[in-house]
Image (tube, rainbow, N blue to C red):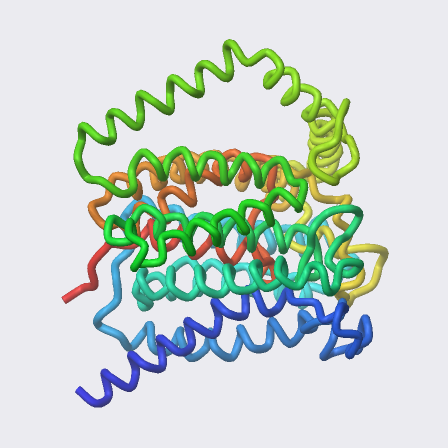
Length: 431
């Protein structure tokens, strides 16, 4: 019993650290003026260097892998999820072998194998091990509190460190880049909103007004990033949360659905100014928030076509997991060599560039599983599974214009695989 208790505490500690590291690894201390931009291998972009991030993850992952093999009380994966996960790891491994021997022959095979190892560790640790060992309620507690604290702290400190809190007219807060604040603010919004709908919170004594104030700040933080996809994400979250959270009475939910649907239809059909406004934002005739006007449709299509032309270079084997870092003939990978312009900004095209036709078709199957997982989560009797179901549903449109999620250093990648994992394992532990 003592051994089991000690292992449980060790697992909880390791999982909590990994969740904290998702956000802390992307913190920038530029505003504090105490760190240089880069000091390898410790500092990068005024924060933790990716090497430190990878090193900490590797050490903690080894501990969790050991416990996972030894544990008899871990949640089982569902058959569809298990089949997909192992098919994905097999395809990535086989394609990397072909890339080393036939495609990327000028680059170090050890570097490419290292990239494969990090991708498999991401999938294994965040998509299988943590969800099977760490309780969902604890996961939600840590990810909600960490993201909410950092976003609200950034917002509160905005007047004090204004110049360093924006990048190109968009709110970045304490994070290194705009996508990090986008991910943190939308994550905080989604995981915090259930607190507003808890029935026992609807009283002054239970701080309902504080919860609403927090939600307003999180909404403003998302708006200040001037990211259209993020705004759509929290809009979907708010709509679905009103429908399925709070009261369990079917009549109340039916009323909510009818009322919200009527409002939505009225806006879309009769709100000509609203429709015109959305069209002008999408086509770049006007800006969104503090962001300069940009034709989002044209830009995305250019990126897709650019990605497809890269796919044509190696349609059967792909260019590899590290294709964004492979510049020139260097056998070493440096974080400074990352080229975001190689990102097709489309899940399916990105998968095709990485792993050719096999990964392209598997990505389509995977997206279908995401849709099923989202609705299964929202239909659960467990409120915590409803929350992650809402998270996944709200991100379905975002995934289409995002890249394949295989980076251990990626903030969103780690969060997404955790969500996939919790929806892919059973709700109860094996007895």
